[in-house]
Length: 250
Image (tube, rainbow, N blue to C red; front, side, top):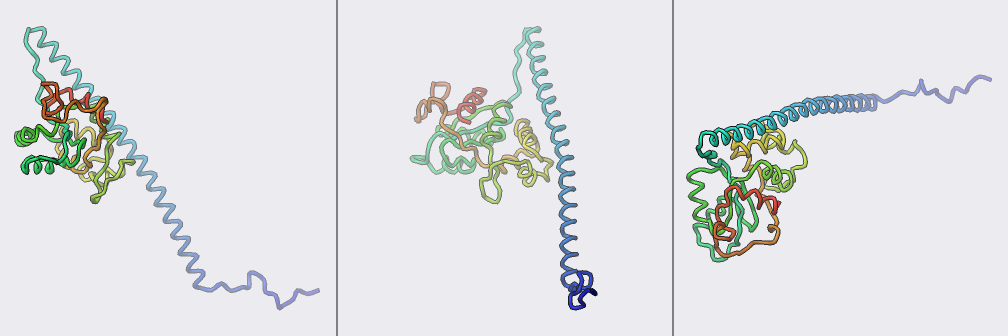
């Protein structure tokens, strides 16, 4: 029996031109997305290699600095001299007291330092001007030099980026690259290195970080009254003992 002419085969059904165009557009878009994803994976892989290489170079640099310091100390002992370490380039500053009974000038300085709340902390470059500012607000803060371990602990555990006025957790190196990539800072180790060495882009790095929100130290503060650290209190310059406080608060 001959097939019915009233039923058209699939090959004889005409596909509208608009549907064909839509299919071609969808296919082209899909191919473009796949190509872009492949390119992104390729770039990310290359970037990871750069990041690992930089991190390795930073470790070698830190180790070399430690060895040089030990060598200088030994040389000084051999010749009967005293080894005097270089002056710190960076301080970490923590606010101790609230806003009550603060004179306008110290209050303004605390605002300039971005220390708006108790237990807020910031990194600052040590200059004559910043040292004068710290002296004026010394009853309300404690500060000092921090080591590499303390800097890392702060950035990794308490570091938040300042993005369009928002406090954003640093969960990806892409956040750092977006903010600081134009300065050659593309990962968290670049950021740590710039702070630790007080690099040329120190200001941009610290400005891109939200002030660190820290906990009360283990055992709490000794006194909220102004008693200098050297006198058994909390306020003022702790010098190299600041790292110990950071470990308790981070």
